[in-house]
Length: 293
Ligand code: PLP
Image 1 (cartoon, rainbow, N blue to C red):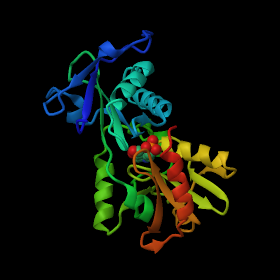
Image 2 (image 1 turned 45 degrees about the vertical axis):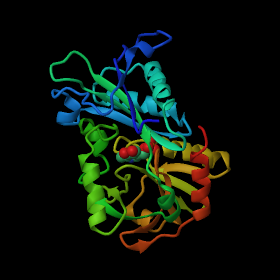
Image 3 (image 1 turned 90 degrees about the horizontal axis):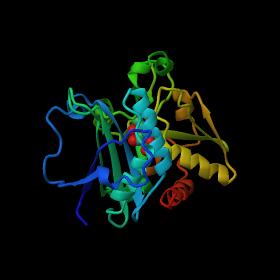
């Protein structure tokens, strides 16, 4: 297969109930330019996106991803996406995925400046090989997010619960983590509560309970965290949401960063202090996350 495959999508109205949306999809030449210079996603990061893990052609957690796309669009005052159109777009690009692990990306942008409609497209490409990091885990540093725990609810225009295209801050945090000799970062509020990693959710184990920061508007609600919780509950483990301090993090019995493409990785150290690692559970979680869901 080609390294990448892309479809432009002519966004349908959310009330459109046709059965087949294939005529709204246009395959793109991925080696040629495709976006207008007036495109607001590139000028301002004004849009929303999703990254979906694909295993041997099967896209995982499609429903959770299209629902979160709609949630992000709502927070950004974008026109409501037609969910059935997006499900069919995901199926169409996933059918072009290589064997093994791949990534489907969905992008819904504000569109062209002064233009009539949003711009939308979907792509599929092979995923990087994450075997080593799934085995070895990541050392993280905690980084100040610059606001307190109530900011998400107090200032919804910060779009903290939306998966927007404005990821420059998240990428800067990863570079800062690398500068400090770590592999990844976990954001901490001004008042000392842990939030999430720049591209992953945080799950802690405390005794026999699994906890994750409550997604109260300040962080993205991770589809992988939800899937992991389903698996943990189905196998008789206790799970919950909580307000967690940086001290809860460094004193946890184990911790993971979980996300759709890299899946579950153990946190092996926080700010240079080692954290216990539960390699068996990491393997169990990844075996589950790599199965069709
Ligand atoms: N939090 C942030 C900021 C993210 O960017 C991501 C994924 O990219 C996640 C959490 C995890 O979300 P998911 O499990 O749906 O991939």
